[in-house]
Length: 324
Image (cartoon, rainbow, N blue to C red; front, side):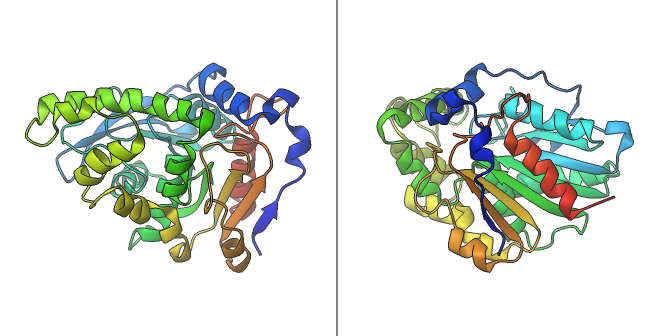
C-alpha cells in the first residue's frame, strides 16, 4: 500500500507558508538559488527540431538525475537549481533539459511542448546514457512531473538503466488543473502563463502564418481558447477536451512498472479533483503517492533549510530504492 498521508511535514512548514498563495508566489518569484555550473549542448531531434540540455557530470558519476521543468519554466528555474545542487552534493550527475522554446532560443517547428512530450524526454534520456550514465532517475515538477509519469507509463521499451521517477506538484488530470486556474485568485497564475505563451505564438505566427493566425493569437484570454485553437491542433489533438484527456498522467499510471513517487499538496492552487489518486496508490505496488496539507505549488518550504521538502524527499526516495 504505497500511500502516505504525511502529517510530519505539516509541522515543519513556516507559518506564513501555510497560505498556499504566499508559498507558491514566494517560491516562484522571490526565492533565489544559484544555478550550478553546467555545460550546455544542443541536440538535434528526429523531426528536425532541437533541444538544449544543461548538464554537470559530477566527478564523472555514473548515476544521474534528469530534471524536468514546469509549464513556461526552464533549466534555470529556482526549483531546478536547488534540486540539482542537492543531488550534485550527493554525487549524482545532473541533466537539466529545456522543453522546445524554453531555453531562450525559438525552436524550428510550429509545435511547442506539452505534458506528454515524452519523445523529447526520451531523447534526453538517450543523451545522458550516451555520456556513460549507468543509472538514470527522472524528477519532474508540475508539467515536468506529468512528463515523467507519461514517460514511465507510455514508452514501449525503456532502457534498463532508467531506474525510478519522482513527480512533484503534478496534475494527474490536466482538465482539473485547467479548471482550477479559472477560479478566483488562481487566475493570476493563468494570466502569468499566458503572457509568455502569447509572445511565443506571435513569433510562431510570423514564422508560419499559414498555420498560426496572428489575429487569433491576439484573442487569447484563457487556456480554453489557447488549447482549443493552438495547443491541441499544433500537437495533433482534436480539441482541448481530447488534449486534456490524452495527455493526463491518469491514462498512464496503470502501465508504470518503475518505482515512482508522487508528492502533491492538498492546498496546491494548480490541482483539482482527480489529482490525488489515493485509491489507485493503495492498490499499486510501485506508484507511491504522498500527500501533505501544505506546500503550495512546487514550494514545500522547510524551516531552517535552503532545500525544500520535495527535493529532500526525492533524494530519500531514490536512495531508499537504489543503494550503491
